[in-house]
Image (cartoon, rainbow, N blue to C red):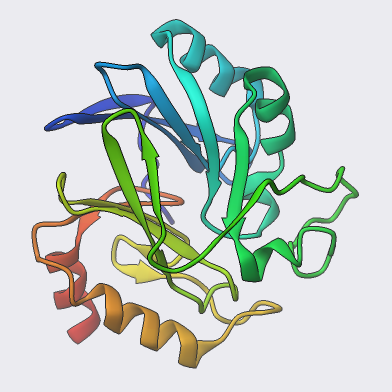
Length: 216
């Protein structure tokens, strides 16, 4: 079982973010922002858009982009609503942009409106907001287009469902691959030990801790 974090704010040097657990699977939606300009990105608005919009409003934030770690319904289902209310563009990796209309590959049991995609992300791309940056690291395995968002400056990463505390994403789902996951994890383990990892579900961890866990 995942240890679920509360709605909370973290001070990570200059970049700030809030964690908003949403939906029945308690997906961690992250609202990441530049405190000086109030420009923000919303990561994985999978449910409860009203809760997400309230945080944006309470903090006076302007959402420039909605960035999605992968194409499973609990990470993107309310992206359209947040986009309509804020004007933010919707970004997802090019490989998972192709599956958003599939009930099987997105794991959704009910029909949802197909999520609009304004921009298809690529590995190595940099997402800028205010004076902040997040780099796209393509980490297929849990899904073909899974990505992590990494800030070298702030030594933190939003890992979606690729890497969890004491675990990694499932590879027994449609579109998953154990071989790809192994390669993706190996790539992430090249990051410094002190990089803080904020996953798509559950509590945070560090690259150093997960390197030790994977070695056991």
